[in-house]
Figure 1 (spheres, rainbow, N blue to C red):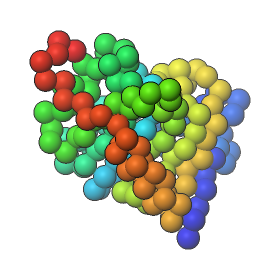
Figure 2: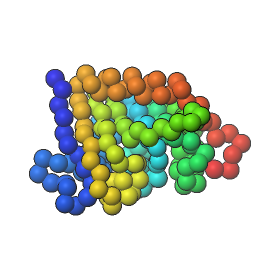
Figure 3: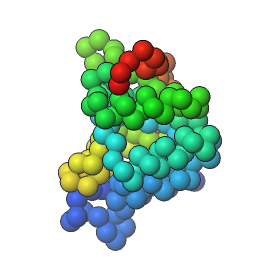
Figure 4: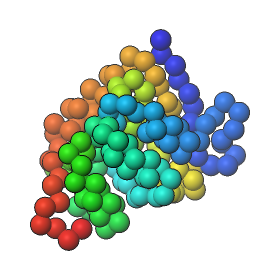
Length: 165
């Protein structure tokens, strides 16, 4: 059965039946048992959400992160993710298709729950900006996971070897 939850950021938008992006992200990462997939235009680590991401990687959850033009991300992001690459269950990709950008903001957990929205994985995206998205459980989450698999296949693996990032 498919279930949809509306999520948002912006103080006037969150409440009642609308959950906050950060709360849903944290729940999704804490609940992941086998796999997490991220596809995002931009990522800027911030304490709560990214400590949960690191915890998932440390407990052995296969984690696939695809960022638009990885080497153009902030130095903080590159350092954070390159440090996590010591864990073999983290697969990091850079989407660099000529003439195109990866503009998705999607997270999938265990191919059963997906978050699709407008928020970048950043402090502003989750707390400051006014963003809207949905959390989907069920068969559609599986379809979103397959799309992320395809995007990964179109992307370049990031190794961080020999870099000072």
